[in-house]
Image 1 (cartoon, rainbow, N blue to C red):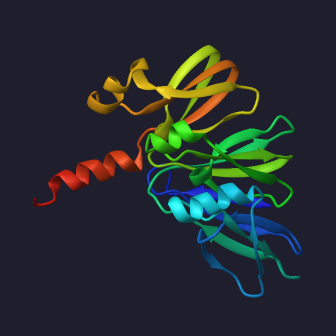
Image 2: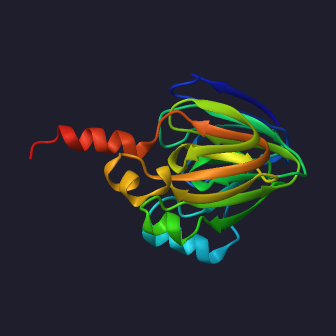
Length: 221
């Protein structure tokens, strides 16, 4: 598979060229165009309870499409829903944990299993749903805003809304910012993920909820 990411970083767009019989897996609704003859198959990701939770409580439905090139090969274009960056990650056996909304596309050989971020995140209004991504191949992630890598050596605290993906080797827990509900409710801060260990976290420089709050404030009463 050959690919190119254009219009980075604000309005990134993924162009993919497939050899005959080659496949790519993508988030449902992400395909913008494809050349004639491409076979499309729709599947549901594993982790059924989490998928149903996302379906009824907001976010992606966790369905994905598999595109298979015909004998003459194919070209496809993919775009995320929100403006921002797209990056290609070379996934290895160590695996990644990915925020479900950050998944755009991948090699078909890569497997995904949905994980619920916990009741603390759900009742805190964050609704964190994660994907455990395993296998060897190319993985494409998208973000709202830019994507910034953070090297964790020991411990690191990151707002849950900014987390895009992190190494499976890292340990984490979800807790209140500042350690109290007062900070969460009145300080403008929500829940955070406290990471420990050694590994990399990818974060997004903006969050949709922040833009929505700003936009809501401009609306007439």
